[in-house]
Length: 470
Image (cartoon, rainbow, N blue to C red):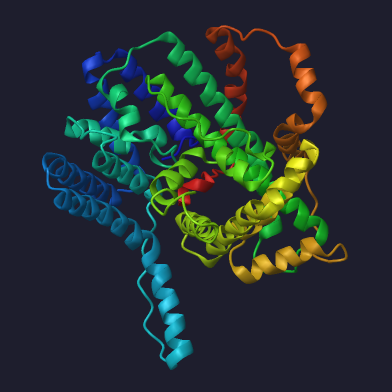
């Protein structure tokens, strides 16, 4: 079940919110936990059992770890809990990919054809679930957090439905106080509904429409893509992935806010970045923070030699690529990010900083857009062919008529993302700035957007969020 599905928007969600509003405060958490588990079980009736069992194992191992004064035993228990979580991720997400690589190597090296590995369905949101569970284990080991007081609290942390499928990745100790008690306030409802409406509009009105153009350009098979369509498709995917994922994050933050939870922001206008270092501080902030705190710093962070620092950057972004998907395209995409981050450390960053900001933003956006080709292409040969078409103005390809709504979504997305980079924009915004309207007025202004988006949801084909596959 997903947020933009009609059955959720017009049936399940209103029913839950009505119950939540009428429920005594002491029963709010049990209701939310039951609903969250059922919400996940709707799409993952088998994996939900693995997730519950894994969460209970976390609780046992962490409590044993916290109760022990033996450093070696604590480290061993922490390692066991992390390994159990990574094993869950490795089996469901990477076993098939590893088996395929092994079969290819066996054929190449020995001429032996091994039997195919049986298919394993990838559970929705498994990477987000596992990474959150690892933060709980490691933070208690480090003394940053404390063990969950109740089993119910930890299970609700794992399964809280707004952030369950695609984040933001939340640390347990950041939300523990909200799990214990949170006031019911009108401004939480008004701000939550407003954020929900904005997120839905991003997803349904812009991302899904831009996706039609991106899908047409990246479609496998048929005649090659030409120069014009290649660039239109790459730009459309840049718009799609940002408005799709930031739209989901807005909806997740809004739904959680209605219930009194405050989740961290996950995007900060990333396409206004100058350099990939800044881009990754603004894009998918919760994942970037996770990689920095739980991988980059344990590897030595910035406290190492230059050569080791570059290696650490590559390791982190190769891991980020693998986190996004078990495919060579994601590995190459991660290497591409690592390459440009290394080049920025070697001097490219200083060059970009000397350029007018609008130029630096456009150069960075171009680098990111080219990288998205690896992210979107079905395989490496397709990515290579697509990039070749983008590089050669004379490249001929299939003819495609871009519809008016696709043009509108593409242009609107690019304008929203890049217009603030222009110097006059800051002056214009300052000249027309007005005090923020009261929350009820903000919600009233957002309701027509919510109605428009809901109307489109009822009339178009269902499009899942991109990051559900991760």
